[in-house]
Length: 287
Image (cartoon, rainbow, N blue to C red; front, side):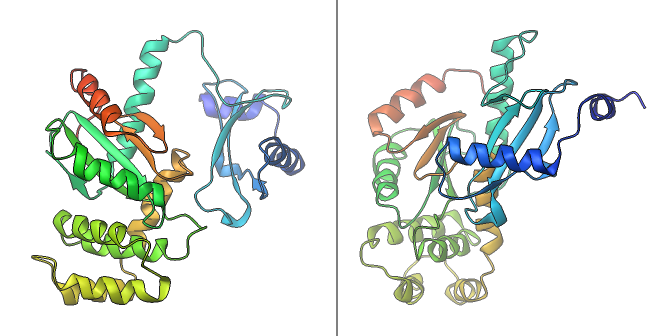
C-alpha cells in the first residue's frame, strides 16, 4: 500500500516500550510534575508523512484526569518540542486553521449558554464551582459582560478539579439543571457561586435540592432524580474530555472565540476583545 501512514510506519523506527518510558520520565522531570506520565501508543501519530511524531502524555492510570501534554519527537528520538513549524505552509493560513479547529472543538457539543444564538463572539469558560477565582470571573461575565454586550454568547463548561471535595458534585447538580433548560442552569450556577463559602460536601445536595423548588419552570422531582442517579455524570465527563483534548488544566480558563486566557479577566479586557473580534470574519459556525 502506498498510503502515507503505512509508509511512515515502515520507514520510521519503532518506538519501544522502554523508549516511551524514558521519554515519559524525562517529560515529568523536566516540567517538575508531582506525578508519573505515560504515552499510550494510541496517542502517538506521525506528522505529515515525516518521521516526526506527535505524542500526547497523560498521567499514569488517569490519576490526574484533566492533565494532558502534547509534544513533538524528532526522528532520532533525541529532541522533544512543544511546537513544530512546517516552513512549506502559509503561517497565516495555518493559524486560521488551528483557530477554526479549536473553536469547533469548543462548541461541538452542547453546553449551557447565555446570549444570542448567532453572536459573532463566543466566550467559553472552563470553571469549577469551588474555585474562588471562578466565582469572581462568573460575576464579571454575568453582571458586567453578558447584559451589555449583544455580540457575545457565553458557554459554560465544567472543570471540577481533584483538589476540591465538592466541585464534582456541584458540576453534576448544575448539569442536571442544564438538562432541563439554560435558565435553570444559570439559576443553579448563581446559587452555587453565591453560597460557595457556605457549602460543604455533606450539605450541597440538600441545600441545592431545596433551592430547586424556587427555580421557575424547573421540574424539581425530575431534577432530584437526575442528581440522585448521577445521570449527568456523562455530561461532566464530556467537558473534562474537551479540557484534556485542548490541554486546559486550571480554572478559570476562558476562550474568547479561539483566544485562550488563563486566570481572571476584567470586564474591560473582555469588552475590548469582544468589540475587536466582532468585526472579524467568523472562524466557525455558532452553536
